[in-house]
Structure formats: structure tokens, C-alpha cells
Length: 187
Ligand code: DGI
Ligand code: FE
Ligand code: FE
Ligand code: FE
Image 1 (cartoon, rainbow, N blue to C red):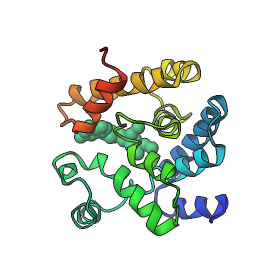
Image 2 (spheres, rainbow, N blue to C red):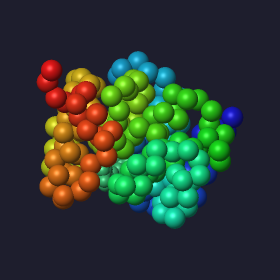
Image 3 (cartoon, rainbow, N blue to C red):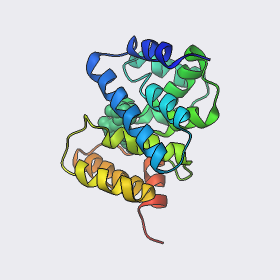
């Protein structure tokens, strides 16, 4: 198993300075949330450090992997922004040797969420949204909610993301809607 320092180096090589700073912010926030909600601190750290591992991969390389490695082909009908979750989980397992399915699932789901989310899935999904370098209208409220109730933070973030996507006339991936129906919509 890789040490945290080795993992940091491998992740840093995959991205620019700004995104690496974001990753460190997600780790800080994920560890804080893991403490607050009694989750596995080490798993939260590893999942946070690797969640955007594939974010700066070549678009064509990701498309090829989706075609050849048995991913949901419907991913290709939506913006490439949503590919780095599932493709990232695959590459983190293959290239970094991370084998913990709880960690790989959290990476996989971190952009669009899911109807079924483990504590770690929720922590990474929320930490990505509220890490200290994030600055957008609503982030302060999201941070307050995250300390109080993690499920409410998942709901707040999902609603915010959908608002943003609709505002920009962006195609919405069905799993994003499933996340909304489970965590936001009433009855
Ligand atoms: O990788 P990060 O920038 O840290 O954050 P992220 O993995 O949460 O990615 C956010 C991006 O994903 C943002 O540009 C909106 C996009 N996104 C989220 N859900 C959907 C989506 N894009 C499309 N087309 N459809 C979705 O359902
Ligand atoms: Fe991401
Ligand atoms: Fe996110
Ligand atoms: Fe991220």
C-alpha cells in the first residue's frame, strides 16, 4: 500500500497547481467531516486525494476507456465533465493500486451522486463542494449545513448543482436526477 506522501506525489503529477490545491482542500474537509460523522479517517483521506485523479486526462483517452472497459455508454451522451468520476475510479485502481471498493465507489459517485450513498460517498461528495478554496454564493450556507446534517448537505448541493445545470441549459445525466429524487424531492 502506498504511503500518503507517495500518493500525494502521484496525484500531483496528474494535475495543475490549482487543482492540486483543490484536492488538498477536499482532503482537509473530508477528514473534518469524517471526524464529525465518525467515518474512517484514512479512507476519507485517500478518497479525497484521488477523487479528481482523472480530471485532467485527455478527453479522447477517457472516451476510449468508456467504450472499451464496459462503462455506461450513456455517459458519452453527456458532457465530459461527468466522466472523470467513473473513469477516475478505474484508473485509481489500475494505476495507484487502490483496491478498497468503498473508496473507489466514493470516487465514482463524487460528481453526480447516487440514490444509494454510503457515509464515505456523502463525505466526498460534500467535501468536494465546500472545501476551503471554493467560493460561490451559497458556499457558506452549505458549510453550515454540512456540520449540522450530512444528508441535508447532500440535498443542498444536489439542488444547487441542478439549478446551475438548468441555468446553463446543460444536459442532465439521469443519475443526477436519481440523486435529486432520492435526496431532495419530497415523497
Ligand atoms: O471535479 P470538480 O470540478 O472538483 O467537481 P465535480 O466533480 O463535482 O464536477 C462538477 C462539474 O460536473 C460541473 O461542471 C457540473 C458537472 N456536472 C454535474 N452533474 C452533471 C454535470 N454535467 C452534466 N452535463 N450533467 C450532469 O448531470
Ligand atoms: Fe471532480
Ligand atoms: Fe462535486
Ligand atoms: Fe473535485
